[in-house]
Image 1 (cartoon, rainbow, N blue to C red):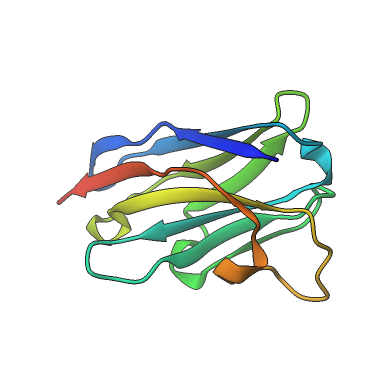
Image 2: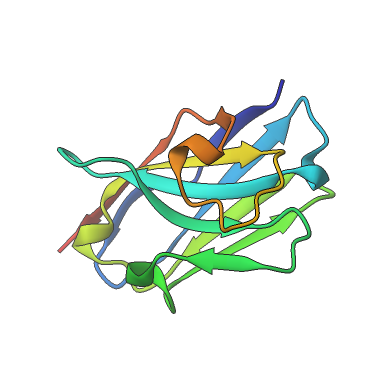
Length: 126
């Protein structure tokens, strides 16, 4: 069973940066595709970014393209989300997720993932 623990959230001014980390344990990290999702108050959880288990392919939701970068360090069993040029609308609880399934499409749905972290709060003040 994979356990995921996010960290790095906090309060930042608009235009600032944060780097989220998600440490994994209990599984073979290099075999998992890792995703980031977020949930703003009163809204459904939405896909943000994914990095495939190969580490060579990433995908982003349109609203964060060019501002966010997902990466992974298999030696540290950690996936990162570098967030630059933050906006008030990026305020949300951010979750990392893992899947060991090999899907014929981009895993961007909640049900694509088997394991979830507890979330970390990101608040962007305008």
